Length: 223
Image 1 (tube, rainbow, N blue to C red):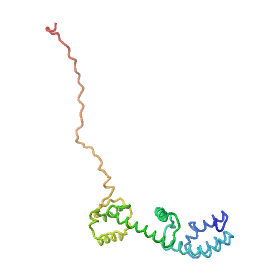
Image 2 (image 1 turned 120 degrees about the vertical axis):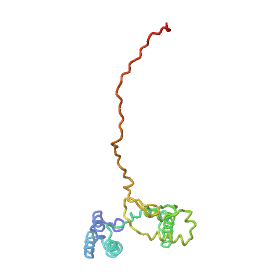
Image 3 (image 1 turned 180 degrees about the horizontal axis):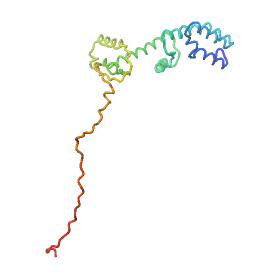
């Protein structure tokens, strides 16, 4: 809106708020509200270039790729690229911070995702950049044992791990490495309060006594 349509600052702020606000266009609950807010957006400016772009392009894309998916997923908020900021840096390094042709970009994205899968697989035997979460430590295998497995056995173990999509809420329970036993963390941290032994004898203080200084007596041999 700044470089192409050159819309004044106040109008830009109004349009941005009408689109991305909590009650804005992207969060419209029904078609009537969506059309109503769209009319308010086009009325907020007299710039014909922006109005044409909004009606012919932006409005449809906003509805198809933002609003409808958000309603279907029933998410609590809009998804932004901030959710994957850590992988953004990986992609920028992989593309050398330059635009890519579609075919080249697909190949590089595939290589990045493939590396992610390999690191996830290595985490099962304690290698790579990832490590298993405490909820999935039952899938851990010693590296020597993993090396002895056949390709089919490795693939089956990894597929079993990937299919375990349980969404266990974080709890205060500690689980054993094989996943068979668990105990409450509080039970581990709680200590039995010290109790005083009523029958324990107390140290007695002896009564104070007076020691008289020994006096020398005259001895005939000392003269």
